[in-house]
Image (tube, rainbow, N blue to C red; front, side, top):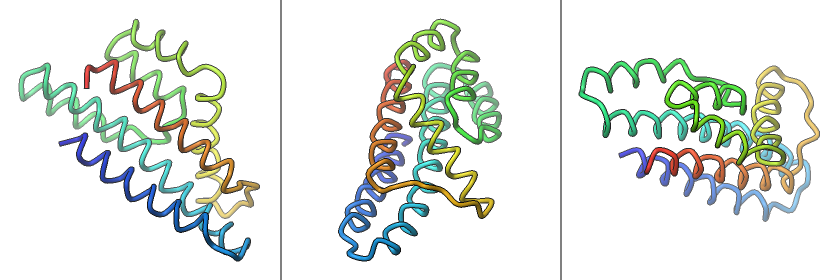
Length: 153
């Protein structure tokens, strides 16, 4: 179920990015960029949450899986630090591997998505461009793929 939901959200984002890239007015495109940043942050948060929930459903009994899913509802602001902390709750080895795999650009992109999302939500100005956001989005997808691979999904 989670792969279907992640795929659905990714397809929706891909369609919106395509529409936003073709907007002729730079000011309108800038507004769309902020909107998409919020959606990408939500996509990242949902994808991490759904992945670990699916992992628990496949590996644990129903009561434990329900507990894990309930605890995952508290996961917010998916910067790399919190993602790594959550990963370490499942496996310290996974955390170390994910930290190595995401150091540098992937980590910076994820942190930029959430940092910009927080600024946008609080009415602050952001200097986010569509070009930069597209790269952040691609990097976030790579992080999601790494998490899913670790879980064998």
